[in-house]
Amino acid sequence: MGGHYSNATRATQYNPTGKVRKYVNLQTKKIYIPELKKSMRLTISARAIKTINKNGAFATLKKAGLI
Image 1 (cartoon, helix red, strand yellow):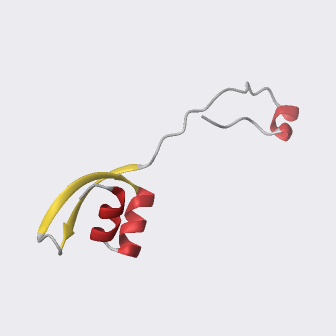
Image 2 (cartoon, rainbow, N blue to C red):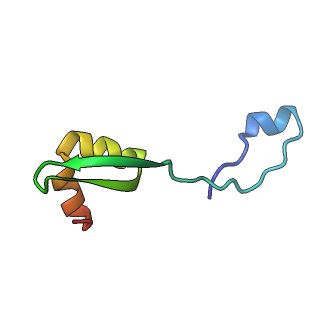
């Protein structure tokens, strides 16, 4: 949960403050893992995709407990 209007916005016009639900940016991605010689279809966040690109698929998935 998060998000309210700033005080400047509140001062200039009527904006009701309320809770805003924020969601994770989930993507379905097919990843090839050369160590296992197979592909996996995963639903992972965009941040996880960046981590996989940086550290490698096998190391990242092993640390997360998916392999």
